[in-house]
Image 1 (tube, rainbow, N blue to C red):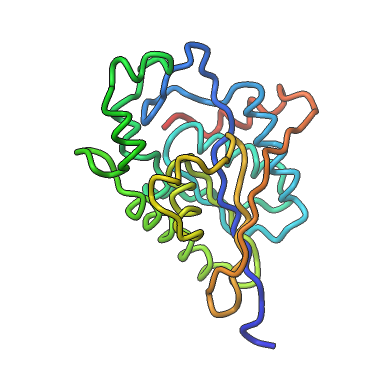
Image 2 (image 1 turned 45 degrees about the vertical axis):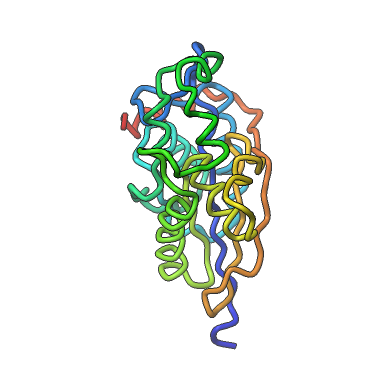
Length: 223
């Protein structure tokens, strides 16, 4: 029957970057995927390979583009990756980028306010604002691939903001949703464009040799 088809959107957090100094990378360039991240991106691609993936969207940041590129390399007919600024990392990332994770409370004590009242500080987005920009790309994808599949690669806070809003929870609780790097949400939309089911998935790790994927990832370039 017309209008009964299920459209699936895979809303992904980028895979694990190469970050030996363990800093917050925020919007900084130069944070491509490490070996584990490449395996995660390939594992995502293997999972998607049997599905009718018609669109792939990614944040402009290097780690997201590389995740999307490696996943697409496993698809039999990979669509071109489309960059969307709405999928970018949270604005708050600019306030802490380059700071070692162990020093963030000492050097940016405002982080506690960000946790308790997200969006209250200057330069910090509200949960609703992050959810809305993710939602714009999701709606674009749902309209573009009715009855088929699209993939979006973004970052932790925006993805969790979208998830938290779907659950109808208090804004501060979005921090406590668990979505590891390389994990993703599977969204099911009915023929009327309504989100009917949301399923979180843990990262999928490819156990083959990642070196062959390195050249593919390099084609994605930087930010």
